[in-house]
Amino acid sequence: MISFKLNGVPTLFIKGFTSGDIETMLNFAREANAHNRTANTTILFIDTPITAPTVEAVHKLKDEGFRVVFRDHHGIDGEPTNDRDRQVFMASAKLELLLGADCTITVRREHPACSTLVSVGEFADALAVIADPDPDGLTAAMKAVGIYYPELDQDAALLDGEPSMQVTGSPLSALLAKGVATLPPYDPSRPREREKALEQLFIRWVAAVKGDARAAASLEAGVEAYDQAVNVAHELAPTAREVAPGVMLVDTIESDLYDPGTLMSLLEKRTGCRVTVFRKDKGPIAALHGIQYSLAVSKAFQSQVNLQNVLPPHTKSDPKLGVISNVSFLLHVSDLVWHEQVLPALQSL
Image 1 (cartoon, one colour):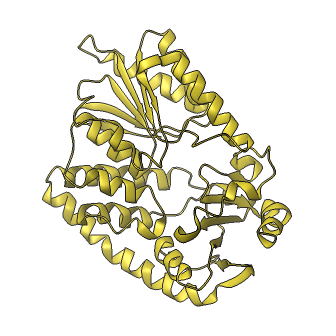
Image 2 (cartoon, one colour):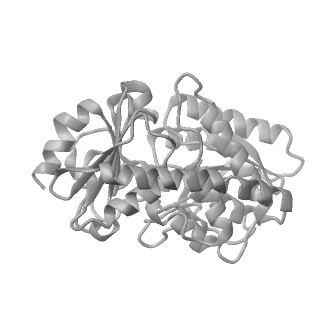
Image 3 (cartoon, helix red, strand yellow):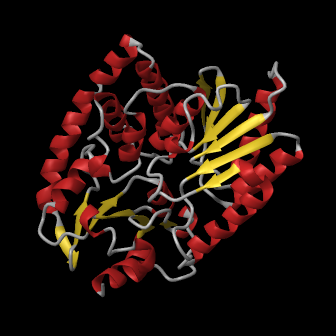
């Protein structure tokens, strides 16, 4: 859980995947309300994954008298084609029924960044904000409460896109992207370490956006670590091997910290590279299963390759089951799922 105030508005960054997340959201809202000195009971959910736990949290908050506004761009674009899509579709329908005009769910094709779903300062007087713990959620929450700079919407779209594009925005945006790229990897023996580092990065970056020179300088100091991670990516790229037609795999286990965006970009330059795969021993699936395979579709092939189609139709996105699948161009799986389901499907594409 990441939580701090943005322009005085209590803001919680959380995924909304578990029953524990529901309780965290409810307790966060109650705590914010306990210190509320106004009549405003509005809680903005923005860029929050459309999940059953999120729906339950919204329902309970409504029952407790809060006004909930929901804005997100992860709706299903077209007819649902797999079990995950159907779950999102049904959860979206429930949110729309619960919230009516206070619910806006669109798709990434129309709104690449969630910041485009709010106007500057639209929720500056909100009781609280709940957002996804990533740069898109952060920038959307910032804009909602009135923290803004001219390139924010364009930067947010890049930050929420392919890793190879995330450092290509404004100089301010690049500092955030490079900071995220050099966060400590998830370590199950120290589960809060990465989260705390991300929280501090968010806080420093918001301060830099607001003109804090010391915060900007501290972010600039971290660029050296990013540059080293880029060098490691260049060393890893030649080790890639083609495991299926157009599918390039790099084993990153035991390597030094590398920049995924740079490594992905180098692999995508290879003729015919459709999908990049990183074999890792760090990450939410690796923490549970030992090994994690992280897949990404090359930008040029994203209209042709849907990674959700390499899984059986009723596969659930759940780290415990060895699968994280939230968008069509990214996929994370365990060693078992990789060998039994994903690799054979890729070899027949």
